[in-house]
Amino acid sequence: MKICFISEFYSPAYGGQYTSVKGVVDICRLKKIKYMVIHKKSKIYNDNARLEKSISECDIIHIFGGWTLFYIKISLLVHKLKKKIIVHPMGFYEPWSLNQKKIKKKLAWYLYQRNFLRQSTLVHCASYNEEYNLKKLDSKIKTVILPFGINNKDIKKNISKVVKRRCIFLSRLHKKKGLDILIKAWIELKNKNWCLDIVGFGNKKHFMHLIKDTENSKIRFLKPIIDPSKKKKLLDNYDFLVLPTLNENFGIVILESLARGLPVLTTNETPWIGIQNKNAGWVINHSLIELKLVLNQIFNTKDKEFFIKKKNSIKVANDFTKEKLSNQYLKMYKKILL
Image 1 (cartoon, one colour):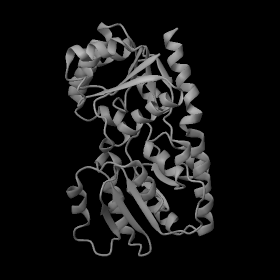
Image 2: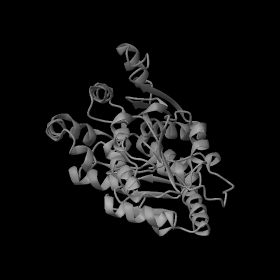
Image 3: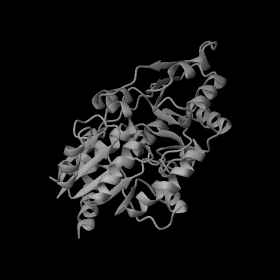
Image 4: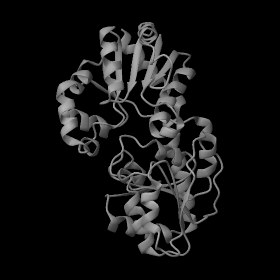
């Protein structure tokens, strides 16, 4: 068995997309499955003859993405070669995403996108949320639900009882991620003991403008992190992650944070609603009022309670190790080759 992973972008700078693809590549390594990765900047992709030869030599083509000319070119070629195809949509068909450039996407959906998904052997959804939203668009699409994982070695073993009074936002600097209401909430609360660090790629100037005339807001913008080991060390400096996002099909940064013992404050627009029931975080509606209420609650949480939430975060992360998920991925790949 040989699997070809295809992603328009394959660099740590692209955050969740890279981490997701790399995670499944790691699972192939664990199970000693042969694989190759093709992306937009690879030499193979830019040589049509070589691209066709490489894909023809693989048994399964696992595509991450949709909509773009890169995806159209690959999809047409893969269907021409009559290969087994798995598509992971990367959240591109979630309600929030579909409302961006709505007319163009609706046209693209009926022209080619729906047919590509229907003709795929399977569509790989990372959560029940993603599958539900996809099935609402077209019930004929064949789906499988498999979450992404984290390396067992990346899960923190020893958790400090010390509360540093530090919070981190770690994601793209984008309106979808709710950074605007987070900054507004933090400023309005005027808490003098807690600080917020914002880390990510994107339009930094737009969000820095929101704190330009604010004194003592305790908000800092730090340099983006690319190296995974540096990301782990960075997370270890904080007490919790906040991600008041408008939509996530999975939210790999939430898993990465839980694995380092950080409870997470996020919205019910992610598949991580269960962290609240497991006392490993807080889940709200995407609302400035709710965000302020819960942040204020967190600021007044006793150190002992924080320590319990940190331990529970580790417990949640332990259910999502690549080692535990690897058999499910292997089963999926074997099944479609029957």
